Image (tube, rainbow, N blue to C red; front, side, top):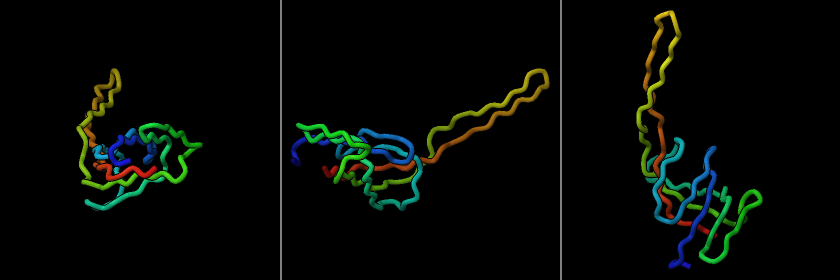
Length: 108
């Protein structure tokens, strides 16, 4: 099955991600060190090239192995507060931390 394209939808934190082997993606910050491995067993859907399996709520005996690349800040967003007729204006910036992962393997 190494030559077939495997897909999986995983739940990591409060979000869901559609992944295949070798993908790189950014998720909410997770406390891991760079290069450390993470195995996610919350697989919601898997596809092995022929058959699609949908979990109830998770697919049994399926997992996705991830490798933590780094933690980086995302792009800056501006948060503004404003009150009419009182000359109150306040603008602040925010940069959310995100964990960068690489998908090592999808085990179905």
